[in-house]
Image 1: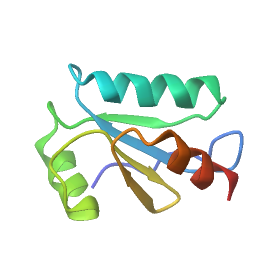
Image 2: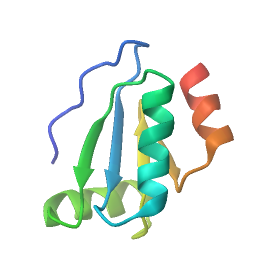
Image 3: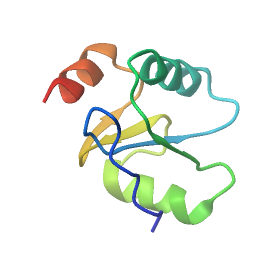
Length: 87
């Protein structure tokens, strides 16, 4: 299991499961940076154990998978990310 992400400035624990070549992963991470949200980035292309953890959490093999305080968001869904970060 991946190490726990530290709480961000806004008090959320955010993990982004991504790959180096995924354009939607880059968009999601850029969005989080713009919002001032700290996150742990886990490259599932290089870490099979983390990839298995991501599939277990989301039921999906596609990236990005974003875990915000245990709420799983599959893909780059700006509205859903904003809602999760507002909680």
